[in-house]
Length: 148
Image 1 (cartoon, helix red, strand yellow):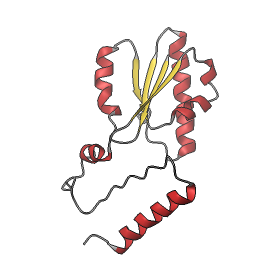
Image 2 (tube, one colour; image 1 turned 180 degrees about the vertical axis):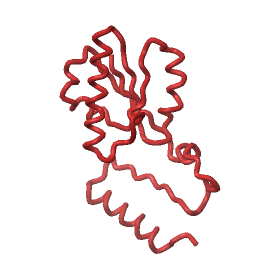
Image 3 (cartoon, rainbow, N blue to C red; image 1 turned 90 degrees about the vertical axis):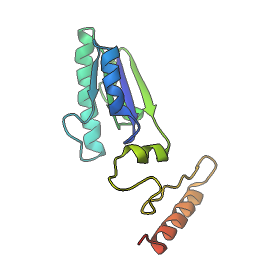
């Protein structure tokens, strides 16, 4: 079994690993970046294929792998060796931006600090052009109203 736990920074991936290791001592709980952070998307995909190879090695001895990282589930499905796995799953961790900001340890910057702004654009019913217009508006506001 290969389970990919994915999510952006601050979502809780690394923090959850200690509990998973406690609950599943016989399962290999690993971090995608434990051998270094890939420089780009291609590097991340190559690294993920190596993890699939590790999952296959574990599968051959009757063991499982839970991997945490920032790779999307689709990249796991695109790995050349993934079809050889007998079981594959994915889990996306997410949290509200205000929670992520609190978790990302910016020394001296509180959640209400005026030096940062986080806006949410719900793209569910918007065209690409409408999304771009909203981003343009936010960018123009940020550029013309810099924080002192």
